[in-house]
Length: 86
Image 1 (tube, helix red, strand yellow):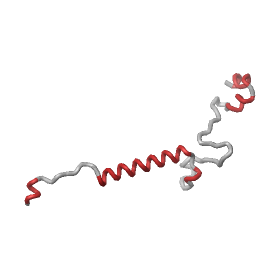
Image 2: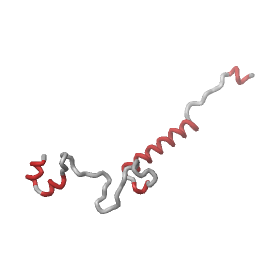
Image 3: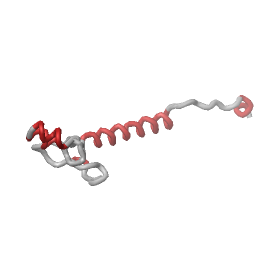
Image 4: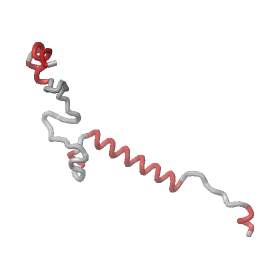
């Protein structure tokens, strides 16, 4: 892989690492602030990577909707007629 990168030119050499992987960094803006994983700085949500914010928001909505369904919805249990007459 290194021989191929050397033959392609300087751009290809900058795009490869010694282990053969690319240098792509998710949610990393070259001219913006540094973004961190949510487990590295859990109290500073403004510095999280965007995909971690999306996962946290979707998980929160899922918990909220399932809790509301259990509290307010679901099947209603009817009491037996014998218990209602006593």
